[in-house]
Image (tube, rainbow over all chains, first blue to last red; front, side, top):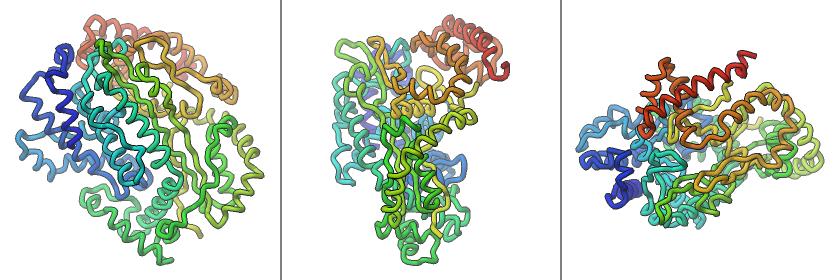
Amino acid sequence: MELASRAFEVITKPANVTDEVKGLLPDLGNADALPYWKHVLRMAALCHDIGHLPFSHAAEEELLPKGWTHERLSRLLIESEEMREIWDNMVPPLKPKHIVKLALGARKAKDLQFSRWETILSEIIVGDAFGVDRVDYLLRDSHHTGVAYGKFDHYRLIDELRILPSFEGSTEPSLGINGGGIYSAEALALARYFMFSQVYYHPIRLIYDHHLRDFLTAWLSKGTLLPEGTFPIDIEGHLRTTDDEVNAALRIAASDPEYPGHISARCIMRHCHFKRLYERDPQDAKLNSEPGAAIAMAAKREFGANAVRYSKPKVKNVAIDFPVCGPDGRVQPAISASETLSKLQPTAMEFVFIDPELKAKAKSWLDRNREKILAAAGEQEDEEHETQPKSSNTHVVEPRNAEKG
Amino acid sequence: MDAGFDFILYRHGPFSFDLRDELSSMQADGLLELAVKREGYGPTYVPTQFSEMFLERFPKTTARYMKQIRFIADELGDKGVAELERLATAFFIAHRERIASVALRAQRLVELKPHISLPDARFACQQVDSLIERARPFSPREE
């Protein structure tokens, strides 16, 4: 909320707004409207993550009913009667729809039509290039995990934010930066790159996501607390289910073999997680576009589905393009202005994990069969694409059945 | 043909976050790389050497979509952001909002993208109609 306010102050400061931009965005010149929008932005920043499930993203895709996401839950809360009363009592009263647009952005509120002004304001929160949500989670996670990768000079970056009038031949205004902020923008991109490769997509963190998901699947589907088999999507139910309820259930399940999700809970609580069997090698990708998936499938045939887990985290676009205004007033794309940004490459990752009791056996099996598995699976790919033309960026392929035996 | 990507109206016209993710994924797989072809303009995705080897592994899929890909590349490949913004938004309106009249579509385009002039919007709508007509033989339904 503090960062969003600061970004708003910077981009609307009269000295930072050119006449051209003011002409393209009438809201910027409307002194009465600006305090309203600042208030909307602050409330949107506050409510942006309000719909998160216990342990945030770990089990969202699998354990919410089809069509539901945490953003949809955030929207449900923002538009709820209880929250409307709060928005109505503010001075001036705020429109929930405006808060929803800025909190979720165009990607997650596809049914709403955004004005250019709303698009720019939503980018202050959820923008790929320098959204304050991203700034905040990198700094916060870096601090709490005790790593330095996520730190960068975010105040300098925010101080250099500008609404720029033109970009690549289009005269549509966009959120960009002054040239002086390019080094902070590079530092943000690098922070993100390292946080993903060293923290968020670290294989041990990924396997704990699996164990947690497996536990939650068993816990939810066996009616211990939530008979629906998924997380509740009504407001009361959503607010009732927090990390605390899951932590308490994990503790009980880990020591009670009869409790739903016992084995996964034990893996988490006793730190006896599945071990890495295979990690994607770029050379293997020349034989098969998803070598990890091919090896996971073969390993499941060999050792059983419950002994194997496969993880393909979603590829993150690290070098986001945005306009940069040089000292001569010329606006150019960041990737042209910065050699560092132009060289940042996204990384594909895949991991196959195995039950620790089978690790030695599985390693030996993989050494003997690796090339054969990859070559055989590669030959089948053209046939599969014939029947499934659209490829998928889905990050996890995993059986729902979590428990052994 | 429907590639299955969801588009929304965003900066510089219709945009698909799913398609962008897919392109990032292809970049991570070493199939595409970014190259700045013209100073002052953003980067372009270009195929890598590895992508040629990759395509050789998919002869049936490649053959199936080659005509459509060539048509799109020939028609749109050399256009800049500003022109593509007009054309793509005009196509989005024609496709999603099903407005028959060119004049009404042009008005709608200006409403959505006020920095585009009405004559440019009208011309873009006419170009899109012509493009749709020329694309008809390449539609899977027509084959």
